[in-house]
Image (cartoon, rainbow, N blue to C red; front, side, top):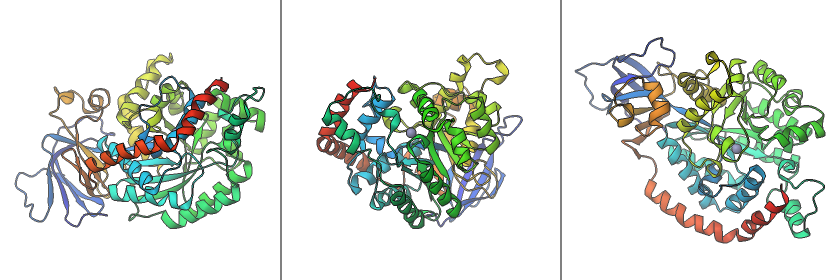
Length: 485
Ligand SMILES: [Zn+2]
């Protein structure tokens, strides 16, 4: 929904990531409908009758951040994981996220969206959900993002083969009751044809919903967990409906090993052979990519989404992001789900992602700068959601997705450099106003579209319900750990 009255961001600085020199010049930015209609030098005398005016004399206007990989179902599971590696976390996560009612799905998505908006995010890729799902499980997610006013790509997470990478080793003897859950529990795949039909029905129902705020993507959980035929079917849907593809990629060393054993080639090569690389494809993690993989990703313009906190949090590894960037691979940033993060701060990802590369013994001229990393999160993010050229700059005709930081806060005082202080010092603490698609969704730190206190209260109640309902799966997660290493 866009607002009726024009919006005026008055007397603001503007962050231009492509400017040769920072500027302290002031502007008036006019938004009509969902677009930036004009930008003029700030005028002292200005008629503002009938205009929604935000005084931005202490602020800087910054293009919206994109969180290009998260999982909304995990937002009730912050603080639940500590000494857990990837397979252990995955089984625990089933107990946290399965069997939810429509009300739980809706409220958990609202909780996710509130945190995203508060951290300056104006668009998200929600890799949803964790398990097999039904048509009715997606409506509440769409409704929540529409109610929040947040731009969202709902990336339908599907797989038609086992989660090979989190199972006990083949030579490991496991008790029958454990084996039963592995074979018929929450991660049991459904047939490829059933899921292709479901994805198509959901694309037809929801792609473009919310006056264009909502996009649907098809999203293999990981190529490793899908058959060739199923991946080809998803590529077909992507081509037929002009929608993006999103996936996890090479998050652990075991994924590399299984890929070569099962397919005789790297997963990236397999994706390319199946027509699953390109600028409409985004891959989260991409930690264990080799030089040949990087070349294929670069040549096809495939976007890699960097999730450094999650990658470290469950001990997966350090993605070679600086190397991929210098090889021409488009990079975006994501937080992953709250169960492996545990917050959804994209600026925290940018800070860690930038400085983490510096311990990889690269020459200084190949270190990532704060400016490069912030540009990845904004313009790389726009690419990841298929909005390149429409989002990411504060210029006339762009979609009005941006946020305002207060430069009088402690983190910008004294003011030396807006970009470095935003990335290294502020981490989003000084964000006061957020605008998405021309609508003010946060004003002076408060969400305008949903009742935050009510969502938090409902989250506490529903969290207790989940724990009571899924007791047997929590017990399973504790027991299966003994057979995973
Ligand atoms: Zn993920």
